[in-house]
Length: 471
Image 1 (cartoon, rainbow, N blue to C red):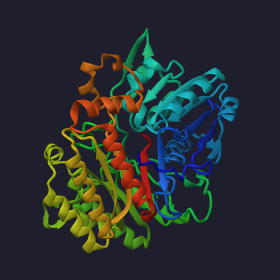
Image 2: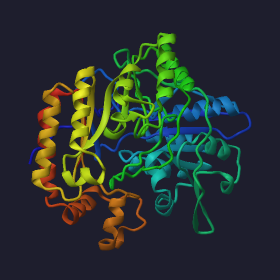
Image 3: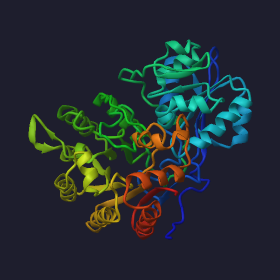
Image 4: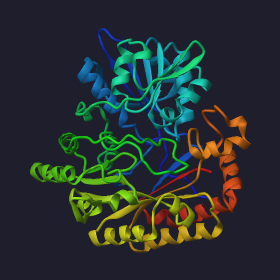
């Protein structure tokens, strides 16, 4: 079997980060961004440059949003972010509120930290972030050290928690009450929000000049029917362009050259209107802000046509505002799946051709294991990857196997045959992925894994960044 060595996850990048905040009247707080679980996920980074350096291994910028809000609205004072070890967190937890972010790649580490914090005297342990948001009920059923979970943007809920308001009054919070799990309705905060205090971020060295920036004012979630998505939302939001400009100016003033911008799908099937993008472009020109943009998008969004300007495609407007690299979920060249997702080969070819004409490139994402997957469809996907690469358009590669994680529709499809997985907050990936391949594909996990690894090994030295789940 082909295997690959996982680089880019040494101690310099794969650390647990904390932000410590104090207030004369409210409880002290420690915001924690856990390290990746080195046995689950690797970002293989073959470049010292670019917006993706150490993505998912550095501190979550979402913590800066939270700290900035607490400073502005409540008067908290935060120290600069710093890396830490488990033993240090144990010493810091007594009498404090501990807020921990979660991703699929860091969830098991997060639960370990939650246990340490609770055993060390934390008055409340709060989890947030994409993973815990998507399966709050399951987390509370299985993790007694966790007191509260915030689903969605956490600024307002965390403020209310620190003000000691009753959980029942806090939108988007899940908690235990009389041996029952209560999940309050999610509510998105209004805009404009507090500007982010980037001075809290610790620059690691001059060469790492690009900031991985998740601007949560952009659309949240994706409306596409992907069975593997664990954080699928249907409520898009739009941040005022003035807010984006203020944030961009702050990044430029901090010396950053590249910004990673977007939610799961920017501009979310056209929700970012022609006028919004026009005002953003005008403001960037007026402010003379020279900042390259790296965005998350989809084939559908990038090939959107504005109703009021039918000759103008979204990808052209994105290039006008400074986008050079697009992370696009091509996902597969499996015809069956493309029909389900209402994509078409013509639309994908148009996107590739237009990107080449405009001098743009892709951080392409692909997945093996869609329904009906076979060796033939996987080879078609591999052929597409190499075609984009040979045209000089593949900046980076994310290549995974379909994982039916908690809260995904894929897991729901497996539960009738595996009732023992019901209400679990974490399932061993190999076990659940293997079951998926046996039930819903015409290939095997080993065949898919070997083919995936061959591509990763072959392209590792030729791309800026390669990411993949270790399996």
